[in-house]
Image (cartoon, rainbow, N blue to C red; front, side, top):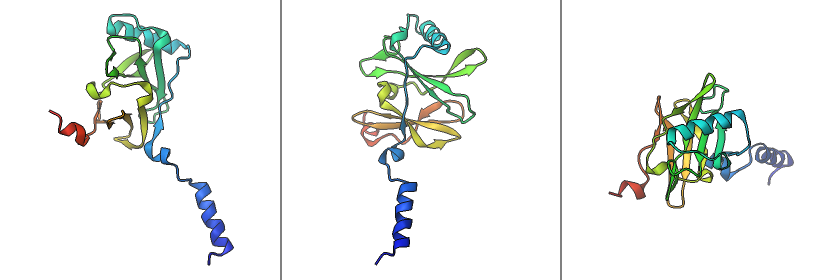
Length: 165
């Protein structure tokens, strides 16, 4: 028989720390298309890098403080660019503020980084003091971790990819 105080304690624990499946999976990146001076600068940078105009209307930006220093970096996806997008999706660009300009952070550019903005999330854990990015497609999920100088795909590969050749 459960006493009233034990029942109250159990209810209190459940309310204080609800079981939430999404918390175990991490949190989705919150992308925006809102105008801002940073957005204009990033649009110009990506247009210069690609050699063709990146249309501001299709530029998706999500702020993420990757290293916990209080200054957000920007996870950018240029949805209308042939340079950044193909049949498999779009390659994201991770940018860090450097004074008044932005610099790209290496993000393990390979076929696994192609996707849509909604495919990306942040894992609940950190590696080497940095957030872990998660790319979830219909056929696989892979994680990108900080190796000290760049984001790289976390190994081992998912079984479906490890056997591909």
